Length: 137
Image 1 (cartoon, one colour):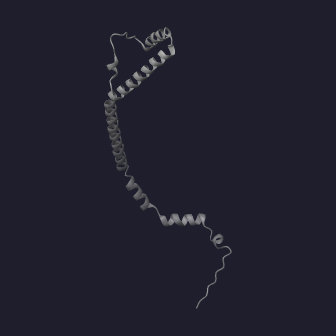
Image 2: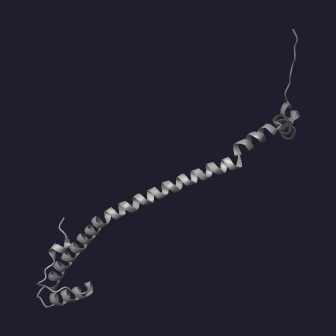
Image 3: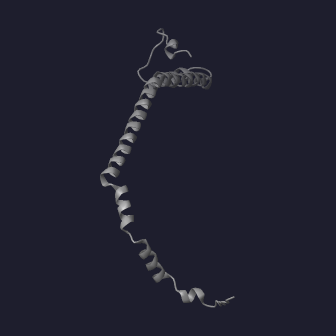
């Protein structure tokens, strides 16, 4: 890809702004027999220059963008590692595993089950309409 500065020519004027350059081009085009043809050519050159400039800037900035991406990825990895370490420390500090084990050991599971049956299970409703026959041999 050719660099844009390859097309600079010191025999011609360089305007301070794009607006001034386009105003000059419009004035020159209007002095011609076919101003629209001249403006079409000028706009084609301008579009090409802008496209080349964007490409050049992308190429120039690529190493910087890659460096930024690498630093951000490293910072995210460090942060994630720190968070995991803090969570592990918090679990160890609070002794959650031990507290859960203690709570399960202290819990009378038989009593809990019996309490649930007493509150939620009615034998008469469960067996209503059921007939049972018992035979002995």
